[in-house]
Amino acid sequence: MRKHIGWIAGATAAALVAAGAITYAVAEDGGSDTGASTPTADSADAGFARDMAVHHQQAVEMSYIVRDRTKNAEVRRLAYDIAQTQANQRGMLLGWLDLWGLPKVSADPPMTWMGMGDMASGKDGALMPGMATNTEMTKLGTLSGKQAEVFYLQLMTDHHKGGIHMAEGCVAKCRVGVEKSLAQGMVDAQQSEIKLMADMLKERGAKARS
Image (cartoon, rainbow, N blue to C red; front, side, top):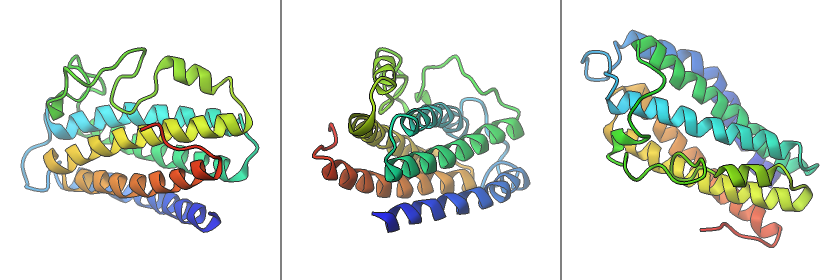
């Protein structure tokens, strides 16, 4: 287990080092790997940047909640790594919107750029697939120890599955080369973390919810 956590920590550090270079690359390539103009507000590039920034923010919040609800070193380390990685990526996504001169919010429903605008929003504050509801976020803050660990791992597994689906949409639809690369990196990293969390749940006599 420790070597898995160590790998994630290393990946987090690498992502932090690369952040400035990636943001600079977006500015330098004019916004597209095909040489086209800067993305428009209704483009997949802008939609992914806006929606994934929101999706990531909840993962950061969940991770900091559980870090304060358990003393288990492995869960706390995983939560910290997820929080740092996704906070960094969120900053990059919002930074690109600034570089493109585009708004960070849209009147369109989440995931409209994926053709899922009518289906993305759930109930009780879950704005996109995989996101926890307000009730679930409140519940996480009331649990402690093993119960908090299990619920966090279940919530984050669902969250990653939703994030992977959205990132795969960007890989297919986005035009900015470095953004597509970031999205593919999210897919790869979160798939690995889902496997890790499945092992951690098994160690606690539990399993993912779906």
